[in-house]
Structure formats: structure tokens, C-alpha cells
Image 1 (cartoon, rainbow, N blue to C red):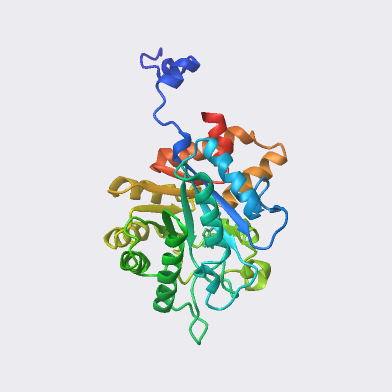
Image 2: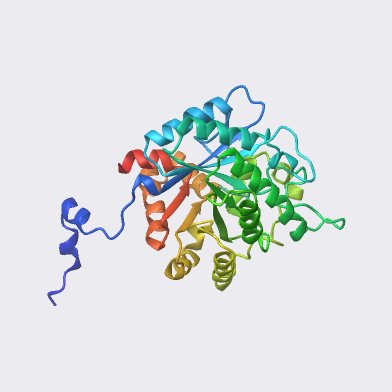
Length: 329
Ligand code: PBG
């Protein structure tokens, strides 16, 4: 049997492969998550995230300039405060580290990047949960919404262009939209982490933000009463529909690599941009395997992000954003 249909014809040369590629990456659709820690005098490495650092205000500013020079689309800022309390009050304090850092980065890069902020309480609470607790110790949804409203206004006032709502409280998009509009911040956008799963892939992030939950493995961050069950696919669409109805400007699926089916579902129906977050554990696995010489680091990074794009992401948050932009430019 001699085949008459030969798909290999289209793969014969690099030029042919390049011309017929269905998906390609562009620096403008990459977003770099960055960490800034209050009271640091020198940037500090994060053991489980090689190449990622807890920044000082100064090193954050410089890294943001480098990110803009690399041509990426934006940065997502996370703050690590010196002091935490039950309500996460550093989150809406104008002098809280994330708000100070946002002002500094916006002043430095202007409109060259979309400067975005994580809107959650886990970085700011002493118990490490994404919301405030009721007397029984449960995460209190509606009391948390009040806190998110205050944090949202503080972040908008600091100059964040897009608030990344990652807490998975019911009604959070509507609450934040209402608070922003009431405070005159109609132009501040809402990026809804719509389908956010209770994932073990966030492991290294806990080290990155010194989360209290992460510090004690015995108490380790059980967020399953608010983040989604990894078993559920339809529910990702349900959460997305709710966030759209509440006014989300952009929706996100997180993590990315193990949730490409959810991403494809959301991308197939969403009338707004769909983003995906290649999270800390996804990056850490690549780094660990590459360090062992088991995989080709660059090719795996490119392939993993390309796969997320192919599944339907319009933009991707990745710890490799700047490095990857340098390769694909
Ligand atoms: C919540 C938040 C988390 C991440 C981003 N925002 C942690 C969590 O929800 O448990 C994880 C990101 C990563 O793992 O890279 N503020």
C-alpha cells in the first residue's frame, strides 16, 4: 500500500512548518506574576521557584522596566506584608506593600504595561485564608465581600488597571464592580479568576508569599470550601457565566496545564477575553525536571505555553513570560 494522502508533506521544512503553524505565541499576550515583599533590603530567591524572587520595591521597579522592554503585555503584582492580621487590613491600607508597589510600578512604566494586582486576602491574613473567618472558623463569604470592596478601591486608587479577583467568593465580581463604580473608578477593570480550582499546583506559591498555611504543612491550605473541585468540568462554565453576568471584563482559568478542557470550554463560549494562569507548581515541575537533565527546558516551556494558547487562552500568566518573550520575539 502506497499512501496517497501524506500529511508529512506539510512538515518537510522549517519554512513550511512555520508558514502552516495554526498557533503562535506573541510577547504581548504574556503576563508576568511578580512578588514584592515589605521590609526587604535585598531581593530574595524562592527555593521552589528558581529564577523567581521576592522583590524589594527597587528591584521590582527595575524588573518591571525589563518586562516592558521585553514587550510583554502586563504584570500581575502580589504583595507580602510584614504584619498580618485576621482581616488582612494591609490589603486596603494605602501604605500597604501591594498598594505602595503598584504606585511605584505605575510611575515607572506608565502605559508600557498593564499593571495588575491580585485582589485576595490570603497574602494579608494571619490565618492564610482568602477571606475573613466567622466565629466557627469557616470562611465567611459575605463578610469577605465587604473586605474585597475596600481592597478594590485601594488598589484602583494606587493605579492598578485590572484587579485579579482570585478569592473564589460568590458574588465577588458584582461586589467589586459596584464598589469601584461607586468610588468613581469606572475605568478599572475586573479580571475574574472564574474557574479556579483547589489545586496542589499552587504549592510553591505558598512559599513565594510566605503563606501561614504553607508554613505549617499540617494546617496546609485547605481551600476546598471555596475553590473548585478538580473533578468538575461543567462547573467551570457555571462559574464563568456568573462572573460574566456580574460584569467581568476578562475571565480566567487556573491552573492551566491540567485544566485545558475547562479552558477550551470557556474559550468556546466566552464573549470576553479568556486568560489562563500557568501556576507555580507547573513552572516548578519544569524547572526540576530540566535541572535533572530530563527534559529540554526551553522546548518544554515553549510547548507548555503553546498548548495553553492552542486550548483557547488569549493571554497567559506565566513565570516564564519575560524569558519566553525573548525567545519568540
Ligand atoms: C490567591 C492566589 C493564589 C495563587 C494566585 N492567587 C494561591 C491560592 O489560591 O491558593 C497561586 C498562583 C500560583 O501558584 O502560581 N491570592
